[in-house]
Length: 239
Image 1 (tube, rainbow, N blue to C red):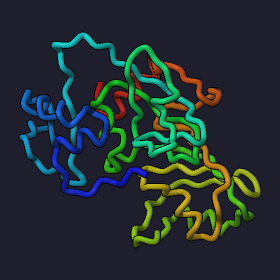
Image 2 (image 1 turned 90 degrees about the horizontal axis):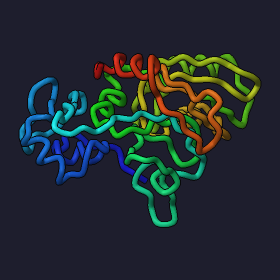
Image 3 (image 1 turned 180 degrees about the vertical axis):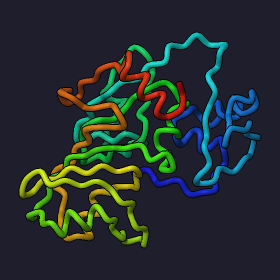
Image 4 (image 1 turned 90 degrees about the vertical axis):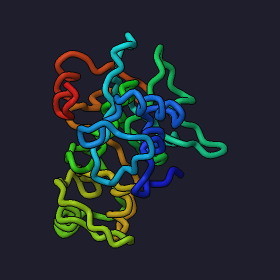
């Protein structure tokens, strides 16, 4: 299981960890001046802090088509760093260009994940300071009470002492609810439910910002184009 980033972290390691590029490629990109931290060129060896904004400017020397895909990840597939015997998205997904997943969706969960070859969007989309919404449909093993909905919405103190942000939670039926998060702690929804004495039986992500899963079947994808793409890129400050 991939560990969460421990800050501060060297800029080249940070870029590689977040799929901007390999660590070796990172040093060359940093030297070119294309890596910006909080809007300023980063230096080799810079230590990234948790709330820094990291971005890579487009290399105008390369005529690479940037693609953005909405993909319905199946259960049992990891998004990053597969261990022995595990399969990752790269093992099962075929596309004409090399793409990588933006963010994570744990092995036992399924649904929407964005795949791209545009390293600029990773930090901007995942950085919790930007409060980009991600929506999930969750089924638990015990009846959902008004108190459960309120406690989830008001924030839950996890085992590590972290209190989750306020979020929007709506009951769907006796065992199911929707939840909209603006942060992404590791296995956050499952941990929140466990603290409130519920076990997650089913967890599906259905939306990331304006990008919706729609009627995509498992393992299917669609290209994000036109106005949908423009809204996404504008919302994260790339366009």
